[in-house]
Amino acid sequence: MATDERYTEHTTWAQLREGNARYMAGTSAADMRRGANRRAELVGSQAPSALVFGCSDSRVPVEILFDQGLGDLFVVRTAGHVIDGAVLGSIEYAVEILGVPLIVVMGHDGCGAVAAAMAMVDEGKVPPGSIRDVVEHIAPDIVRARFAGDRTFEGAVEQHARYSVELLRERSALVDGAVRAGRLTVVPAWYSLRTGQVAEALPLPALLAA
Image 1 (cartoon, rainbow, N blue to C red):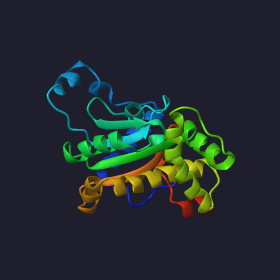
Image 2: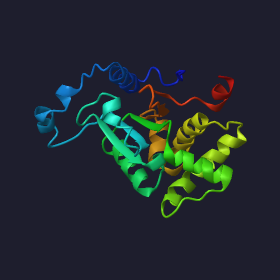
Image 3: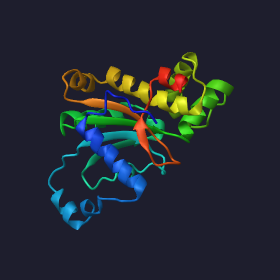
Image 4: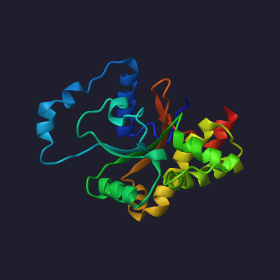
């Protein structure tokens, strides 16, 4: 996976990537930050180093795959990392109150929500119940990827992460203002179930040229 040069120098993102490398290598360094002593340190307050907005999929345990301990990450997860009012409020809390300097919006391969959105767009298959609400939030991103020329599942996942970053900034003046002020970086990323690697989501031209 290629790396987007705009993000490589961000200290917190670099630290998360190092943690992900440890996770892939099976050399965790976070055990001491998950025990009783660390739990006691956090009783009165929290100061997470980053926020990860990802998918609810049980195969994508954020703290584990970044090799982080208790209190290290503020995590928001919904199926297909769909944005709604509760998500925006949670993210704005992390940005404005906790002062996180980094948001990682992370999709993953094998995402059932993205697959269902692709089936809705390509085949007209509408899922039952409130699952439809989730899929309808993702479907416009699938359409945008299609019009941009990408019809792959990987491309849909990566572009959904990038479009989610756009939507987050469009819908939250607090997040957009923090980015413009240089207090916050928002990184679109994706996680490979097969390899365990997290990497920046590539822009569409790079995907098509790969």
